[in-house]
Image 1 (cartoon, helix red, strand yellow):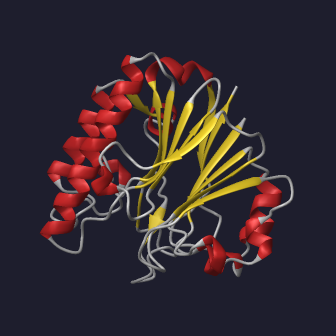
Image 2 (tube, rainbow, N blue to C red):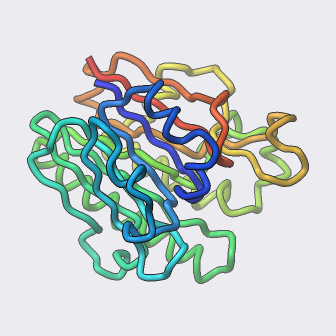
Length: 253
């Protein structure tokens, strides 16, 4: 089974930049999308009904902002949205898809760069999802959390760590949260499989960052430790254009 996660930075814009041909070529079993920036009634039929796929959209209350979607070939046991605390559920950030062997979280984690209030919201959101996932792990469930995490965990995960040490996305408290999240029994699957590799998943639109590969690895598949033996491979498709992020891949046995 191939699962792809991609922050498309606006699904309508991505549709003009090769989104549908990418899906046809990559042929994922499940495609998790973040930052759709659209309600489903605003989308053309070509995006709502991709041949071979069911689709589920979860939009925020604010138009043109945030939003997630999942395209999937096989119907799951259940689909639900949101976290246990309803304070985090009006921005369309979380879709949870349950299959017999695992529970998949598709998450657009908040960005904390705007101000202290949004940073506080981000950290509270992250702690909430950690608690929710920990409950599932305690119940013996296999969990996959994918999406735009909006945090680079270690210095190897961004081009210019020192220059960004006081910027949200690489703050000490954000990086410490990733440590905490991994500490409950989750694994950064790509980093475990590629311990010394340097690859990025996001580049600023400014300063010609992508051409210079001045990027950040802020998109991830976190997998519960006991499910890692089922992971056949991971990849970052940094050659794929169409967004300021690139797709990432988790392949299961």
